Image (cartoon, rainbow, N blue to C red):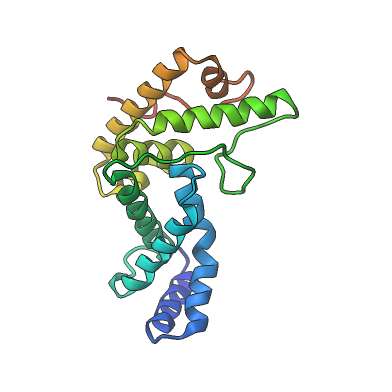
Length: 209
């Protein structure tokens, strides 16, 4: 983060804390896309997304005085978003109502072509998130933040409040679960390992159990 961006964050937060409506709107405008992207990649499209987005920003504004500027404001907002996603996943009896992902700039990146390839991609994403529904909240967060959202293991560990070693293990276990499901599901298998491209980089050199 540049010095100019750091100063801009501090000034924006100070304006928000004085109750300036324009400042709160500006903070929401700046960070809405990243909060939506984080929740979307962890949870997939589901009926509660709008409520979760509102909850995340409610938590941001309620705890804004707790931002100590030790990390960028964006990173701090990410942590709030991850906590909201974790609470959602942890609710007793909650099953994430994953639907087919639609075209969205926040969606996991994968190549789709016309016709059958596009349908395969949509079916593959749906089946992937169905497997993710079976993971523990901690494993799901670690896997989606690292493998789908593309964050480093260190950044993922920081966001979820865990060690890098524990995060590696959770990603490894989640990957094994998904690969086991793909072994019995041709559609998921084809989605995970398309010819000529990798949808999700399952590279065992990244981390060890």
